[in-house]
Length: 338
Image (tube, rainbow, N blue to C red; front, side):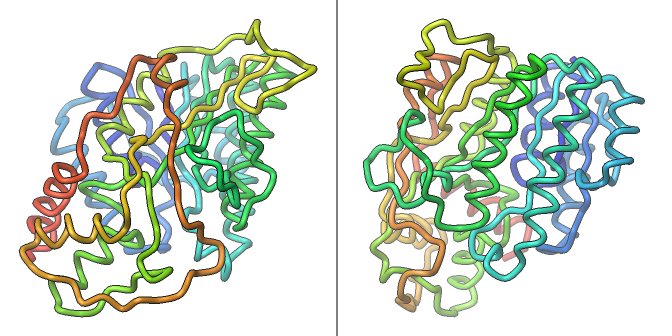
């Protein structure tokens, strides 16, 4: 297939590109290479794709999904079979200081993707949602049928908005869409604003790590390979109308339209202090912990019910936290020569 991959220079994007190329798909990747974090890491990810798959049908174009004219021209020119939309302004805490960036990338950008798919016969759009849509929910594990009406960050609100926008296009234009609610993805080539990278750098430098909510946090840490396996398997299964959908008792997870939403996580939440312990073991150093209060927009725990995705794709998470952290640390040491 010919696949448009937005956010191709991102953490999940790079790994997804490699998986699609490995099985013979043609991939056109776009990214705006912004400076939310060091663009050199993004350029190095793109170089890694070329190094790992030399001669593979991969092309990269620097393009912002919020560029309406540029996106329209791209869809007109390339005629994609399917789209994997991973580009977004990420980060919960950053959304407190820079809300406009989220409106442009996550709302305007997603609308441009939907319009491109609508007008050019794309057979399936798979897009990144987030576990953050569960907001203040305390029922565990989080299930796709749960109400998600109480976001606690603008980032979460934009991701829920994406699901609503996708449903509208699935209903009005018959566009098959699948949203994937990612749960705390980690691994090699990860984002430097996320805990694994922040903690590894500080531990190796002998500096304190900020441990929020005094360490009383749990996260459904999910290794990147397990995430990508779910993305690719989902791309291959195009949703149709859900014949069991009940308009008298509607679920947010499906529809009379060709629309689905799935959790994608490890389904085994890990205490933050245990994750730090795994990092300490892999790095061979003890962390200096600076215990901090809860941050605005954050949640105490995440825990994915992944039964629906497993039923839909047959994919199950396979990488344990100890194995995943060890792989991440090996990459970190090699990349940063640490």
